[in-house]
Amino acid sequence: MPLFEIVFKGQVKEGVALEQARARLGQLFQAGDQQLDVLFSGRRIVIKQGLDDNAAEKYRQAIDRAGAVCLVEPMDDGGASPLEPASPAEPAEAAQLPPSAVATAAPASEQNRLRPRDEYMAAFSDVEAPDFGIAPVGADLQDEYQDFVPLPIDLSALSLAPPGADLDEIKRAGPVSIPNTDHLTLRD
Image 1 (cartoon, helix red, strand yellow):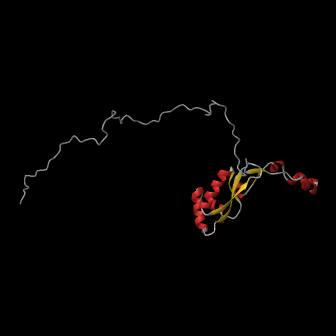
Image 2 (cartoon, rainbow, N blue to C red):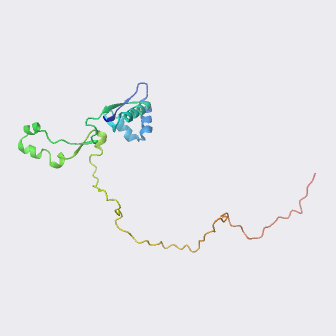
Image 3 (cartoon, helix red, strand yellow):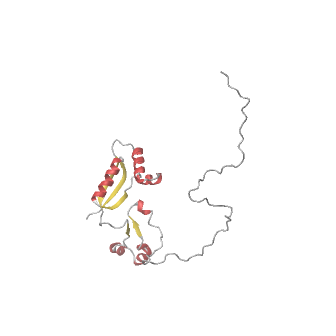
């Protein structure tokens, strides 16, 4: 099954203002100003890859409704990762260089580095992440246990009301004073 990628080059549809399309795409992708600046830079940006034809068409329609123009292109190698391994120097290129230059042209670590497909993926090329393994099923993942130490808080002044009790304000037990209204009269 062929896989497709969504490519955006910062183009908007005729009759749509650039700022309007930019705002709509920002809402669609929940992107900030920096990400939108990269999207509308005019460079080829791969928004999504590894899509089947139905999913790719949904992306194209959503971007089209936002007022922008995107391309749905088939992926070259049927789903390669976004970072492709850099190819070592071609034999023809190596033949043109002197032998001392071939040895120092690129160290082995440089030859094994990943080369980004586009500028968006370049942000992820220098990420150094630890190589975490996967623990077997049922393994204990917590390194060490610590004994529970209760906090030194005095709660003796607090009490709990019984279930179903009215938690309204406590009524005052003081005497209720009724004002004297004997001096008041009613007139017609």
